[in-house]
Length: 297
Image (cartoon, rainbow, N blue to C red; front, side, top):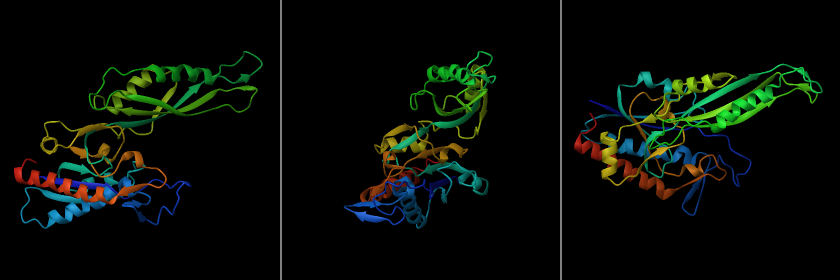
């Protein structure tokens, strides 16, 4: 009998100083629940829990059902969902709760963070006896800015690269011999992270080190039963540009939950109460159609 995993995360990002009220003391106003993590991903968590409890009372299901609340999603930590996967039965399908407005994400971009170091030669700034590492880095950064990977995904678009940090120099009169910079790379399902790293390293003169290659892009075939069922229900399917625990799940997954990702990580984060009740209904319809048709095989 196949197993379906229902999963969402309980951890949050740190709160900013811009909150109007205590982010750790949830309040309800005008049909909204305000609180840190209410949208990302508390609403998904409680909705999936409600679905699990309702379905647990069903007399016969054509699949096993596992509900897992995990942490370290916001930092892609190794003590999160990845730490329990070996203890779970073989998973046929994972439904990951994240704020998607109850649209079904059938693809998700991956992530590589690169630490790069351009080498030069120190010297006096008034003379020409050095090699400026900043200028060496600039050539590589210009390539990063303008390079386009050949394979473009219909769902996720192009692989993108952004230089997000840079550091160099000790004093105004010393030519820097090192320039370090960080590159954020968002990958699509047409490449593995290892393939992307190889292409980048082959083109740069800087030393390139990846912090991790485990956060690959994910994709579920559009003829998979859960995708077909969602489309029959009129649920919109799309490719997501934000990362989730899907990246470290070695089985078919989809991402869907109440709320809007544009509210995530913002001050005065909130979820509408009606979004939660509507999500429970949609989740149940989807799960019961899978039950009736017995198409998770």
